[in-house]
Length: 332
Image (cartoon, one colour):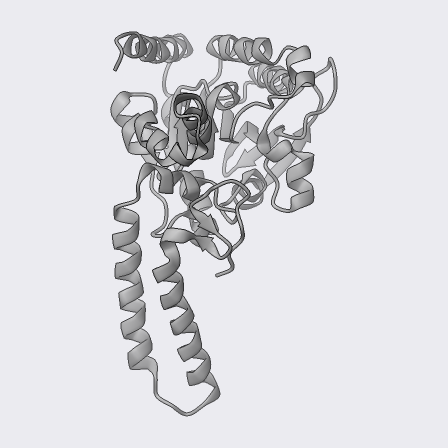
């Protein structure tokens, strides 16, 4: 397995996630023995089998005790599947729709008509890119106001076409630049949140990586909000929280714990409805398997939502988020 350097996470070293060093060492030994067995007549398959069993145990033990900060770094892994991987892996057809009808095209949010199995949907998602050039073009998934206006405009089109909406969330947050503020960043996000409550069509949201602040919530109001096991969803990034509370980015691990941003915490708090399991060792170890799992769950949820009367669906959506507000007001 290849590894890449992450641009932000302190828990990721030049060869991958730092807490995975023992795992990578075992993988290196297995690869060496397999190469040796293949190039010689030595019978090494017993040793290889034992090392693979040890690797499985090591993976299970490591990922069973991840800290919140380590989960943040897993969510940011450079080889974790992103929007383009999901389009390629779970959509039979995808026709991108561009522009907000006001200012221009924002590459950080993608929208388009798609077919997932038997379901025709409007697919919306944060686009991070996979290469350095793509990441720069998409602002690393940080959208401008025109991205959110585009998303709402296309979601309203989905209502007219009687298509359900599938939203894939993966952003560190909305773009914080002066231009974005001048063009109404906060208003655009607020209008999306307000507007999504009124959409008369089923909405399924999945946090596939990072779920940062209003940047995530701008396309995150849904009838079913799901989250991959090692994704995170938070009002602020751990680094941002640490900078505000402790004036030091070194406190990011403590901030991650205090924010209660893991899937397990958010399910307990009622912020999300469901956790989608990842392959052992994280989505970056088996992107195709992860994408299949997400695809299957989306199809199952859409079938469930279609059976609910639209008025009841909208009422449930509204009450779900109202309960979150009551929880926040109580200081929990």
